[in-house]
Length: 82
Image 1: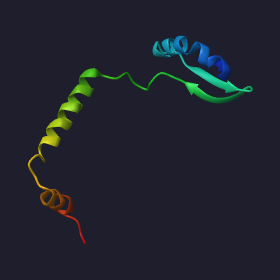
Image 2: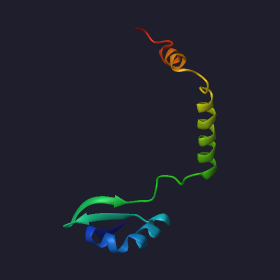
Image 3: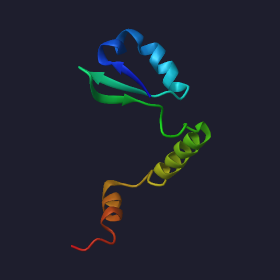
């Protein structure tokens, strides 16, 4: 892991992000002390999985269309013990 000073980040941010996107990691230091890391995401984002999740949320939201406030509250309270 390459070590980079905090003052070096701003002028090189585009280059650093490009390198992180390719899998590199950086340790960020301030006054020779580690203060953070710049690392790639834990796993790549899967566009198909994201699109599927959005579709499922839209279908779920559609289940409650047409219900009035009282019906929604009754559904919320169903199964609760008072």
